[in-house]
Image (cartoon, rainbow, N blue to C red):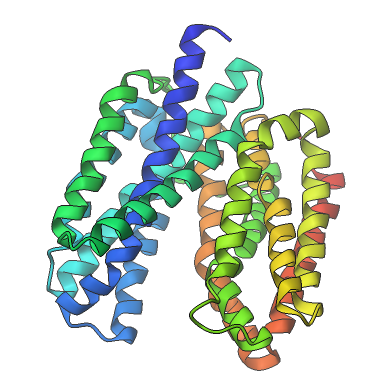
Length: 375
């Protein structure tokens, strides 16, 4: 790999780190924001949906902007807008203003998510090396660092506003070091703002939706399952997601070499089967230790499937990548938003165990579907 591509590789890792860092740093200040705005739980839930709405609306737009202006300009704009909106979240006391700020924050996060994946697809294709799992790992590393940094600052008595400025300082530091290596590729012809996914893109997007649904089930329901179904104290139930998250991060850091050895198709097949077995173990083994072991297997299985899907999006010919990547990202994000709510609906009517079994079945669908995926 030449020096230019190597510099782009490091800069792409940095750009994956930034949104993971910012989003995770937001989570610890939510209780402060709730108190400042005087919100009850129901209103807070509605306000938080504004972030998801902003992300979903901006993702297709990001593809068109990147095609016309290049990744670099869009990434610069979204990074600076994250730095501008993030501190405001700790200051607003109006419900409507908080919702509007969260909408803007979610919009720039969604646009950055699409654009960084497009840059990763182009770089992986040009370098001829498997890199996608490593890039996605740095999003997880950023998430761990952001949550740890913000929690540490707040526990030391630092005001939320000041802690937010510290987060912005870290982001601007990374921006100053790496932004000059972000890609400037652009598409000369006009491109639509949104295109309905078709062909293999729709197929890949559907698989991503199922995978993000599985990840979302771990984020929102792993602790609930340990507490309600396995009798783990509520104060300790968070260990489930901690085990899942740390396992996924390590697996993605090692994922590129794994994908090179196994190949993309075999990685997805074995990953889907591993996640299927993990969900079965978590739901059928009565001991809470069995559930934790199941969470580990789910993380091992899920970790590299979504990165492989983005790599395949860069190889397919049914749609241009500036339309395919936003479409796939939007479908995946829909799984994150709708999945936990769907699991809650199933759990209410048939029990949480049944809901997890349904997710397990979806992992088996992902594993068996690769026989029909032609890129």
